[in-house]
Amino acid sequence: MTLLHTEDTLINRNSSSVNGPKVSVVIPMYNAAVYLQDCLDSVLSQTFRDFEVICVDDGSPDNCAEIINACDDERVRLVQQLNRGLAGARNTGVRHSKGEYVAFLDSDDRWAPRKLELHVHHLNVNPEIGVSYSASQFMNDDGEDMGIGQHPKCEGISAQDIFCRNPVGNGSAPVIRRETLNEIKFTRPEAGHDDTMYFDESFRQSEDVECWLRIALSTKWQVAGLSEALTWYRVNGEGLSANWRRQLESWERSVENNRKIDPVFIAKWEGLARAYQYRYLTRRAVQSRDSESARTLLGLAYKSDSRILVKEFTTTAVTTICTILLTILPINLYDSFERKIMAIAAKRSK
Image (cartoon, rainbow, N blue to C red; front, top):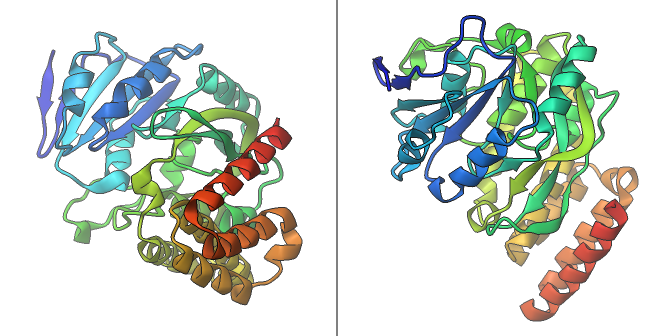
């Protein structure tokens, strides 16, 4: 194994080719060794084979690097750096990638076998699309299907859709054309380095949402999705109990970043986008059984723009009912109620 030393990275160069692969898969790694092998196996099992995998060890305290070093597939490379957060790890992966298309996969998620095959076809036959994404299915901490997922709008995506509803969904769903990433790259010396950025490294959350909207507002590339659930997104306990105030603060900062690009657009849609964001956080609070936060957030959602009840009646009504019942029912009774609701939702989505 040949290692190239840089200022803060060690790069395994054992899988480079002259022209580069069609797809570069970027896997940021931090304290997720327990899930990493499953994640990596889902990439190496892809029906589309012309890819490289850049695994970025973002100063992880566990044995992520050992797992990657044990992989004998020459397409897999390891990059190690001091901790710079998820955005910084993704940026490093992109900088070391060679593919025409760049796919992102968080180390605790996994892909369906035809994920890359279908996205490559989608991008190949639609040269105007810069970001291709898919629907996602949710799994629990043990990798079991939760029976629910993200099944967003996939065609005719506007900047308004991205701002208000984020159809891309999560950071393991998109495959992005390199030309698109090149159009949004920037540097920020005050961050302590001169490396090219694509995701804003000042964010520890909402860095992906900020990036998708920046693409929509500052380039002509289209964003479009595939309706099949090709991404498995892990909903773990840590994610459910995350501080909603911190999440909201990151979202607010992403709005301010993009306000600089198109202040008229932001002013027009901010109220509705904020209502959807509050509703999303309400659902997260309900999932973590935080009834007080759920009530607060739901009230803010209706106050920001009550049209969410009309525009998405079922989702908003279910969120409202769940918030009320979580407040008045014992947890065991509420758990039983929620399982029934999830089962009904799962049947309707099939």
